[in-house]
Length: 261
Length: 197
Image (cartoon, rainbow over all chains, first blue to last red; front, top):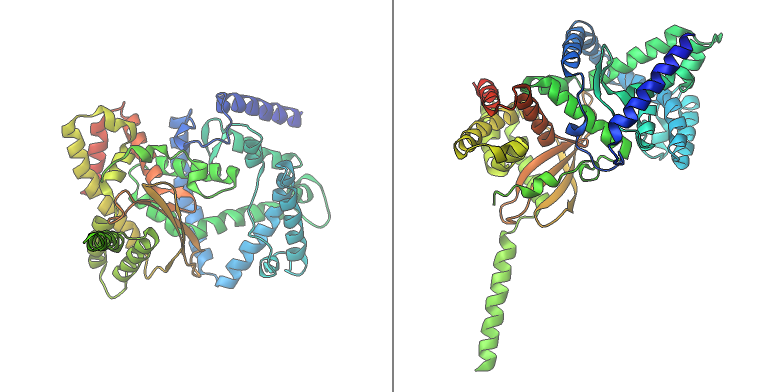
């Protein structure tokens, strides 16, 4: 029963999302982050404030403590978490039709899990594998043409869109092999704790890597909420297009009309 | 006599070309030189206040502050009076210099390597660079949008960090402030004044 309800919610979210996002235009065309509607702005702003308080009490202090750990420990943790994330990246490479990347990432996962000792050492990088790019179900939905829908801020998890949230839920329905062997199924090797500990570590690792940038952004923003929203949406757009060249991901024609010389 | 005239003409043309070439600055060279100046300004031998003063000076000379200001204001700039534009230009410059220098002053001895450049059109060239990683932060890719309409005086118009545009982020932040106040541009002016205090 619970699964039926959740499936219905996801279907509804996706249906609303596709109609909200497409506007008769392919979502892979260049879009400005400001074109994504912030339909629930007042609720989002309240959730954002709540997350900031939570961050100040828990995540930031833990991330600061984590940064005190020796560099090899942090690098090893980060590598192992990246390695684990390839379990979601590989099926998404396949769904996006990127079979070559799926092959490379499978090879990377095998090499790093075995020779690299559960991914602690990124041996694959050292022997010349191309740079690892994470993929998720939200990006796959974007590649398939689903628009982002409304921007939302989730409690604890932070910025998202309807599409990305629906994509994340796919992890809980068989889309994440790591979730399947830890939480969904009772294997003797792993427990629920392993999954939640890896997710929490992933969040702390990300927070620790960006601690200075976040502090700097918050200090220099007049509307921190709007800055974070803009950065999140720009980031998602470039991940879907698989490019970090702004001229390929954003419509930058606005610059052309500015004449000062 | 004809030959003499011809040679004089050739001499003049060559001189004009040489003079033009000698004054035009390649965007990648311009970025590397700006970065080197900023690195020097961020040297730990200076106090924080000295660093901020030096960075402000560099920004005034190398950034198209007015251009960024107009871009950041977006469509709103078309609907405001000349007087409001002048007020905005003044406030934006102060805001930009404060925000820019305070963002950068936190870094000490950043090492930036210019990697390549790509000409988008006559007015713009993107210069790609890398902020070399340390144990505290990963390597960061930084692209510079250089306004090259006047090749003798290239100017920075945007920094794109790992694909995220600072100018676009600022534009959406300003737009959010105006929209939250029913489209009143004066709300943006008040917020800017508050920030630069």
